Length: 217
Length: 272
Image (cartoon, rainbow over all chains, first blue to last red; front, side, top):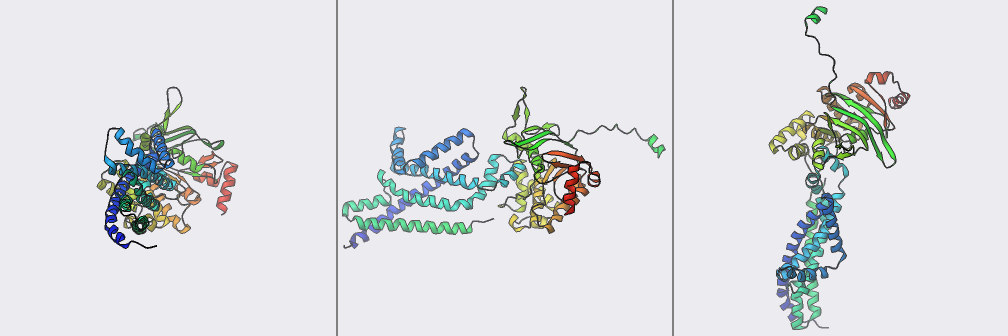
């Protein structure tokens, strides 16, 4: 077997552009997913019963269906609602919706496992459920949440590759384009794997540093 | 002196002032297990009431029911005449208070926990500030001024910027007392405040509590510190098996308990 080095050299900068798009998608979906997930998590911990039920159902649906299907539903569903945001925004939205459900579970787990005496002490000084969540429980849950949130973020980065199916020109899609014109699948897929691996390794490193720096009580 | 008595204005008739807290037939069960079997007592403003009794007799549950950390299964609690936790409706069925109203009522009770339950992510100062700031609506400056005064009152002014994990158990419990005081509650409930402390740290917490009792703070204290109970209590309640077996001034109970169960309990604890 021989490796077509010329194509590899040519592909590296092209893929870097795709990688940039992938990172952009992951960053946007990560922020939206985190914000949405924290909100959903707090609702499922302290919201009114009907809202909790809705969140429960939402999380169950997201976890119980393949992301690929969710992407298609968003991509084909939004135009039916009269909104054609294009494949990039559809993709970001689909990943955000997916990620929010997983983040909600992490938040619920971590906040729920803060010792019961903390809520009782907060109640004893007259705090309401919402105040207890925001001022007492959530700040204490941040550190225990970090490893699980990092996992979710890593999964999110890998999941951006699925947006290739709706023609978002991200890392995987840009690789596929090169394969289509030069017919060197193994080289390109190997290169794609390397790109993802490097990105995710960096993320994991940053997260470990962050975790070390977060205060422990 | 008879002559002065004659010239003095007639003393007011001894009408007992309405109690600050009145508890009637308080009951609590977990499933079929009855923890409190109808507890009734009154507490006057400025009074220090101490609850003693063997472990599992329900003392802690009484305290936790008073500010509704546990929801009572029955009975009535009145704070300055106001029914706590809800009220019977016109049809006689119990109507619990909404969350916000219950939170407002809880502000009128201070609570000091056996295991301190300080907020570990906040400094001592912030632990004391957070209540007045978030629930009483004080400005940051007002809340901090109040918190600093209370920390000074428990002799912790120089430690106010430390986190709970940097403080000893006795210091933590004093911060917890300051946290309760800063809410300016009408009474403070102490749930075995020295039970989780190393023996050599017990006195510093008891000293603070003695001071508070002397200043006329209204308190209910659950404790196993018999000497403290005897010194500080205006009134003592002895509980066993979810009921009050004896109630009275500490001297009488300690020197001449009328109930055989009290006698047995006191023999056990005083022999240690």
